[in-house]
Image 1 (cartoon, rainbow, N blue to C red):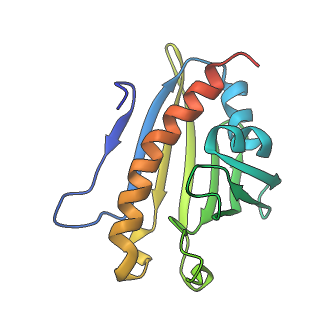
Image 2 (tube, one colour):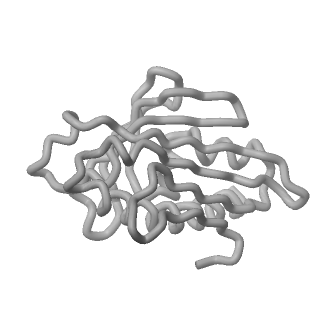
Length: 164
């Protein structure tokens, strides 16, 4: 794991309700914001072919391009867009089994926050609402997304720091 990622993890005996990851991105705020809110750019670092618009009430969806997860659909309902400050969407975490109807579950909330830092932008992601998932899949969804956000923060850092 990169030294630049700050992680908060659940105690071993229980599953927390939220995952939080932060990373310093050495790029202008406009660049980080575009990487978060342009469907094509988001898909490039996240590993998906996406369409739709990151606007409140909008929907962004598409197919994952991550090896062994190409069968998985990415679908997010955009909850909030506070320009260059906060992006929030609801989705079904670790929704990888085609036999499960995840629409019956309460989605989690993913929020990205951008804050100024001395050397760039401190990007923080918080995914909350795991306690509302069905008990039989709560721990696995938390574990997989916890690892996933660690990797995705490195991905967006690399993407945003690379000249366009």
